[in-house]
Image (tube, rainbow, N blue to C red; front, side, top):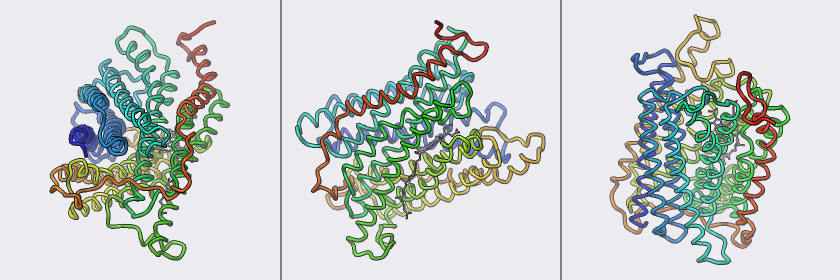
Length: 546
Ligand code: HAS
């Protein structure tokens, strides 16, 4: 692996895992407070550490890891080395994002930005928190353009060929990101910054939330798509098999481009100010975005079964025995897949209007995203780190490290079982999503919830042990013994099983996909957004009058 590119990848992973560690400290404290097991010193607030936890884990850990991973794969599969200009863009993006991260974290620690990771108005932060967000987003845009530039270069120098699957998927992922972040950029630049500086007196809450969720839902696919890249591309190689279908893998990513953005209203189903018909339309589109995940489940089962049968497995489930259970590179992402089955089912429950009325703003939702992003995605990223770090450094994944990785995965699963399991259960009994310890004056409902909150805190403590172990594992991976051609960790890139049937070239017509996406966005948002502009909430002035 190219030495210069290795530095760029590792720099991203270092920030990612440091954010994981700090976010983990905030997470365990917050769980213990909520369970009534500790009290924070009076200068530190529950919502303050909840903000630190959400921002560092959900926004910083993920974004830095993803960009590091994508740069590594793009360098590996599209030229063996990043172009000079791409590398410079990668570093520029990295520096901006890191400056933004430090500034934002300082603001949160100074209790100047206790606004939670969704920074919903009318919660107001110090303007520098929003400026920090601008740094992170603009940095990620530059990094994204770096990936597009390398891809364009590869296509120019390989006229007539279909691009490598990793490159294609990296471009699709960054495309979703670039288009989604336009929403958050508009609300931060035109609403939050002027309002927090006091240049304007009021903020239109419906518009800010709508723009946030225009970004917030595709954000979750920005997390998921790189995990799927590992599942589609790396897992087949690790288990000694082949990618089930290159075209199908690409098609599922195209569907993510089309359907992951115009669905934000499913986070706003319980909000007034949006006509039911538009909520209905966006829920239909939400069910469309479930399809690529179902395709992925199908492709994974097919890969496992084909590989198992090629190794002589028999019977309906004989292939299960042939999977490399002792290999953390497989074990951690596989556990992520397994958890994604109930996690995805939970998502479908959330998206259904009547059931959303039951679970919205309860701990059920917190349980849902701890299974999706904090287990499926996080375990897959951890699984990737076990080979990516030694690979870029030319080192080995030793049997000891592999064992520690398996232990880390099991700790994570146990912790999450208690934490997310209790969240889902008590959420159904109405326990609110974000509150510090309270028994609401010993109200019987709240007293009933309390044992579940204690179980959540215990699960959170086990997870915190998992975070510490993961951080130590990462340092150990960096210090692993050097490997040679045979022993150094490889970057697992699978071959496709359907090579005889070439992938159709039209799949790379990005202009068509972006065009269809723009039409879908305009269809899903124009009328309800116009409504919000002309019909403001009581007491606010309309943005537009005619
Ligand atoms: Fe979600 C809220 C709907 C997926 C994350 N979601 C959230 C929030 C987060 C989040 C962070 O409709 C909270 C936001 C906040 O702060 O308020 N979600 C969905 C739906 C899906 C979904 C329909 N969510 C995700 C993913 C996330 C994520 C992925 C992160 C990575 N979500 C919602 C809704 C809300 C929501 C509402 C708002 C709730 C409210 O009221 O506030 C779908 O994409 C899910 C589709 C997934 C599947 C599963 C496919 C299974 C696969 C595994 C195969 C396994 C194998 C192994 C092969 C259909 C691919 C098998 C081996 C064996 C041996 C068996």
